[in-house]
Length: 156
Image: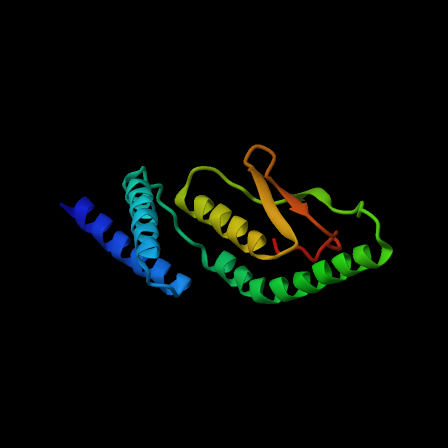
């Protein structure tokens, strides 16, 4: 019964969200909203019913994420300059690529899982870098950057 209630709540929320975003309330949009809401609700219920790993957030790692808004603004500037220079030169850029950074990835304890989740979320918010992989064996994180970030100025 709880699963059905969750499905219904997700469906309602997603249905009205679709209509709100579309701003058009004709029959076609209502059918599209209904179908998209059903698909989204089914996915949400399935994900919710999956195996849940316990996660605990450590205070010092949460405090490190307070730098994320500034990092987003700073890296937005880096990406804008990078793209502006690329357009001005009219050449294909050759910078960017993968970097490996040291990071205490840890193991399967809840606090270590929480650390990995925070790091992946925080670094992926910035427009310049995306976390590709967290290597538990070598205690490193692999990050892809569009424009190089000077060493020591990474978020992690």
